[in-house]
Length: 173
Image 1 (cartoon, rainbow, N blue to C red):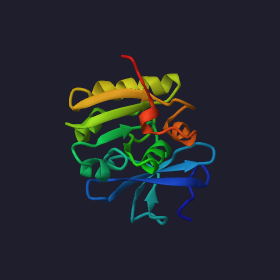
Image 2 (cartoon, helix red, strand yellow):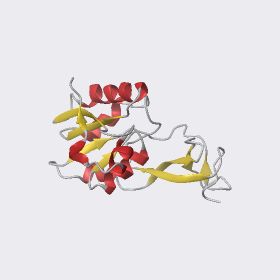
Image 3 (tube, rainbow, N blue to C red):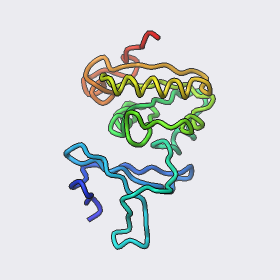
Image 4 (cartoon, rainbow, N blue to C red):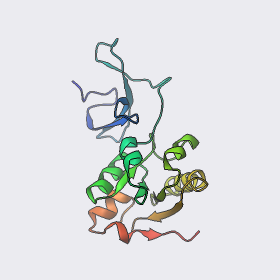
């Protein structure tokens, strides 16, 4: 089936698309918190290839990030689940594929001239990741800062606890 992965059944499938919405690859989340990635491959029996070699990497929800008004704030979270929580709260969210430690410098290009808030997970990899993202984005963004959840570990926990976007705790840099 479409939700089969080499690491067990997917409980969520996140599609990473190019600027016009064509699927480049997908990240599949399993119950065991594994995140196997696949790309479309019409020559494969399943229609998917479980290796991303040669596949362009982009920000999650790239078309929404690019279509956002110049005055909008773009929220960068650590993972897709957090992006979905931010979107449910009415925000424009994105993340890089692979989670903490996987930010690439080229991702900053889509954020040039933007207001950016980076949500740091409350653990060492999350804080290090947020700092890496800030270091990459700050030279091109109109504004960039790091915030943390007021409750829980990440953006999804913060919002699930009843807090809103204005309630994130600002980092003192």
